[in-house]
Image 1 (cartoon, rainbow, N blue to C red):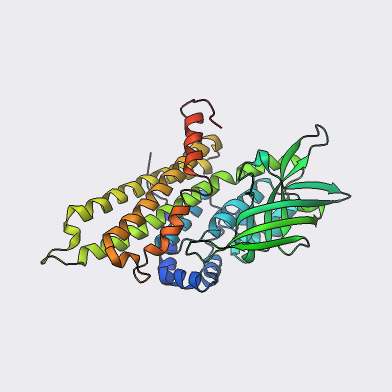
Image 2 (spheres, rainbow, N blue to C red):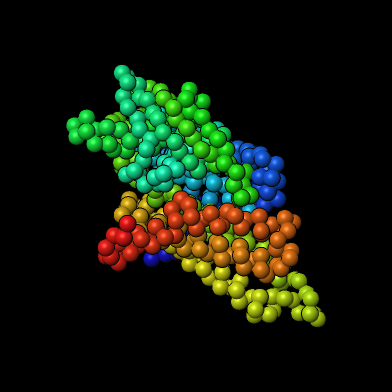
Length: 387
């Protein structure tokens, strides 16, 4: 057993850390408050190959796995630049297309995802069903050689930045008459696809949308995979990478907050010549948060290692646990940092309170802490399903 990264992974971590720090949290906040995107950072990360580390080399990627992509997510977040679309486009969309797309879909979409010139976002959540694909109301039906999609989606990230949205719909199985999930690569400028921006209390350069699909017509090759049978495994293929990279982003954010607070408390002097960090009432909460972040990082590493080894069932358990641990640790770290900085912690200048909304959302999305506890109770502890 080893906890060491490979030399290549170490080099990746150092390089991404350096890139993130060149931009920093000030850049991130400035873009978010101006209603702009972090396009410069995204473009440079793509040019340097960091966005495609998990994409096969034959399509322009780095040939690595989710372990490498988690490193990218964590280090950019640790520099104060947590990029949500890293989770949506390289982690979910690229993984789903790589594992279950046709060769034509590989050639059409993966090179752009690898170099960052293209983004594909993901649409599963609905106003009524949430993320419960058994109750999805978005339906796709055959019409000649085409597919026609109707439905609504909510909390869909980055639609305004993407060329395609990977829509999860339900189709009728001709052999059984039952509905089963299928995924469709829908151009964001398709006729009948409209969007409405959601106002969120989160400082983020990435926007959330309601999507409306009204008789959206797409050709047969918009269906992901060779047939409808690809739908269910393709849907599940994106869940573990999503949880692992969200967790990595949370751990990086926790590291950033603790680093900011530690720098402040080590130098801030109010009572005599001692720093406020010398008082246990200040240092112990920061130390506790640091322990929780490090524990989350260990579970993230385990989950990513299992996933890259093809051990999907074990990776599902570890990925859920990692997401839970990182969500709790990030929220604790940012809140503790704000408390340690006092009034300064609530200012934009010190760059901590700007993350409160994001880390709170991390305990809800993409799967809530309560649903993860349900999962662990049922699949690890052998308890009866409660819902």
